[in-house]
Structures are given as structure tokens and as C-alpha cells.
Amino acid sequence: SAAATRRLRGRSFPFFSNESVKIMADETSSDFNPAPQPNGEDTAPAIGLISQYVKDLSFENPNAPAVYQWQSAPQVDVQFNIGADTVGENLYEVTLKIDITSKADEGTSFIVDLKYAGLFGVRNVPDDQLQPFFLAEAPRILFPFARRVVADVVRDGGFPPLLLEPIDFHGLFQQQLTARDAELAGDVTVGQA
Image (tube, rainbow, N blue to C red; front, top):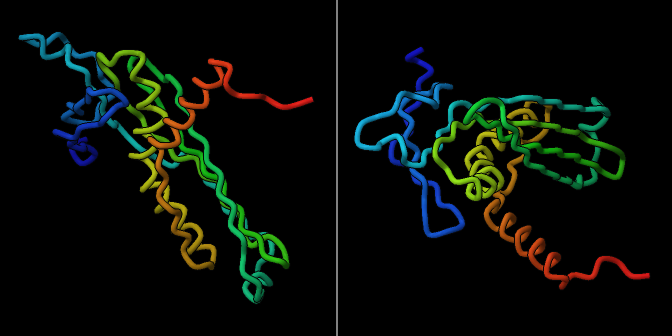
């Protein structure tokens, strides 16, 4: 429908090379295989965010109402994971999984488990550029929305909103590449006897 249409003109997504890919989607649509266009316009690389959504959300407040009387400061543990799956021809779902546990001396304050996903259409993007996009740029796009969901659900659970710190997904991806390259080169010692 026209109300669900999102325009994403001119937004550039940097990759880990000297190239960038422009989002060229005019409307949200799962049709990323349109008929060929004149003058080779359909050969340009394009990535478009089609939709984003809460895939799974769980909030637990196991010690309510006693938790609201606890005096000790909670320790918050945040874990995240990123996954990308093919869901159709030229369609990929990137899922940002965030697990949060807040514990005080008296016990567990709350637990949040969130899977926030985005559906991306991809056309004419080289395979070696997909992994950097799916593991660095796509999570960067999704994170602010997932962050808002977390803040809202924690607030709705009776606690002050939890505002997650920004995450440098590009830096983390670069660290993983560096570690992998070092391991492949034999520079990393894995355990000792």
C-alpha cells in the first residue's frame, strides 16, 4: 500500500573497499527482479531495506514486585549476535539478536531477549561485498530501532529505560577479519598444553 511505502533515495552505504553502493529502491517491494531497464540502469549495484520488524521479543521480571524495593545497583550484561539468511531470490533477512540480563545482589531484576530483523533486497552486488554489508552495515542500520524497542520494553516493565550504548559494527567486523586472517596465517596460538 502507499502508506507502507518508504523512500530511500540517495543513501550511500560504505563497504570495506573504495566503492560504495547506493540504495536505489523507490518503494518497499519484494520484487527485486524487475524487467531490464534501458541503458544498463539495472546493472548498477543496489541494496534496499524493504522492511524491518520485531521477530521475537521476551521480557521477564521474575522478582516483581520485590525487585522495586531492592537497594543494590544492578549489573547489566548485554550480549548480541548477528545472523543473515537467504529468504528468497535476492532477498536476505538480517537479524540482530540482543540478550540482556540485569542482576542485583538480591537476584535477577529483568531479562530481555530481542530478535530485531530487517529484510533487504540485493541486486548486482558482488558476493565478496555481501558479508561486510550483512555483518556490519545492516546491523548499524537496524540497531537504533532495536535500541528503542529495548528502552521501551524495560520502561514498560517498571524500570528506568535502558539506553544501549552505540555499537561500532564496522570496527567489530574489521576485528573479526583481522583475527581470522592472523589465524589463517598461523600467527595465533590456540591454547597451550
